[in-house]
Amino acid sequence: MISKNIALIGFMGTGKTSVGKILARRLGWPVVDVDLYIEAKENKIITDIFEKAGEAYFRLLEKEAIREICKRRQIVITTGGGAALDPENLEALKASSHVIGLSARPETIYRRIKDSRRRPLLDGKDKLKEIERLLAVRKPFYEKADFYFQTDGRSAAQMAGHILRTLAEKIA
Ligand code: S3P
Image (cartoon, rainbow, N blue to C red; front, side, top):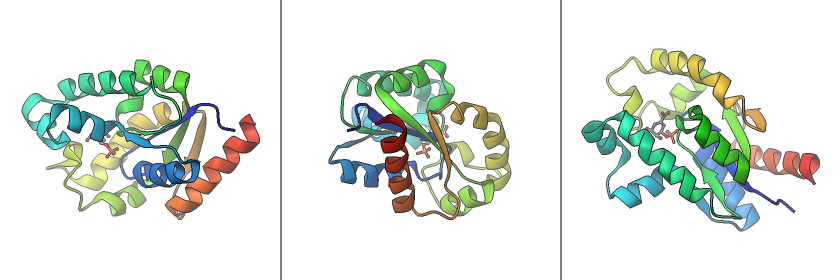
């Protein structure tokens, strides 16, 4: 019934990974996570790529990964929080997938990711302030998704159910 892939975009800590896993289980599709795809291909973790080669190089790897992943069908794609800022990435995602944007309030995001060691963009900064700043810059990009949902106070399972119902209603 769902003809295209489903791709999740949104800020760090909005639940893309958890929601993606549930969607994939319900649809019987694999999840392809862009960050994990890059890590497997480069045999390095994202934090090391940022540290040793810099963010600009990571963004090139991310763009290449998205181009490759979008050739596949019947998958759930979960992206890193910066992926949708590049217009070519968004275009490739939209051509192959229903793009779902997830959002949350800065405080919710902070609570979800404050202890994470996998968020190099926030390292060494006042995390809540940096989340607020980056979120304000990035929100207009996330809003370009085909559907855009708030996740505060909702579990990953509730979000997945909501997404599947919306797609069934709107695109069937
Ligand atoms: C990034 C988010 C991370 C990862 C990288 C950059 C960003 O993914 O891609 O650290 O620019 O927001 P998550 O959104 O899964 O944390």
